[in-house]
Amino acid sequence: MTRLLRFRRFFASRFTLHEGGMAAVEFSLILPILVLLWLGGVEVTQGLSMDRRLNNLCSSIGDLVSRTKTITKANINQIFDIAPGAIYPYDTTSLEMRVSAVNVDDAQNATVGWSRANSGTTAYTPGDSVNSIVPATLRVAGTQIIMAEVNYTYKPAVGYVITGDIDLSDRLFFVPRLVDSIPCSDC
Image (cartoon, rainbow, N blue to C red):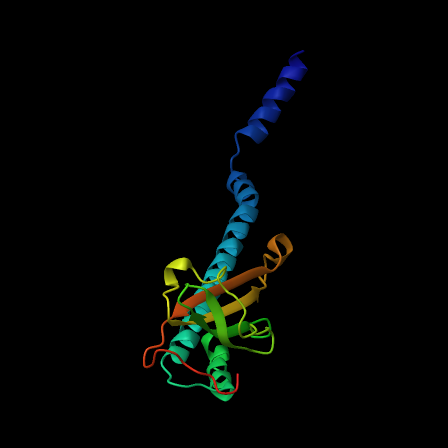
């Protein structure tokens, strides 16, 4: 028995009293968690940055259209051309943009007056009802509303395996500023 006690004392004194590698073990256990937190923070920041850029783009499209007296397809295409600069450095291949004039009749029914979209999106058909899209509080009888919409599929660089693609979208409404309604001659 004494040999067994001596061995235990030797083993205990030799390995349990030395704390030199304890910090390295603790660091190796916490490192994966810290890396995941850092990468998650980077992805969330980039996603929020892209969402903010989309909001600014949508606001710019609607604001530029609402400041005109008349508009054409070519004018709208020129407005859509601001997109690469507005969302730089992100890719524009999955960016969809649409701007529409919504006419509100005396019964407060909203219908599409004209609509134009970039190549990745379908424009609304003139005369279609958009009561489900335009909030009732914005449907003032006898007015026109400019509706700007953007959609983007955000692909996280690191978190793609976990979350997949994230669809970001924005829709904003504007009132024509210089005239009561903005006609589009060739939309």
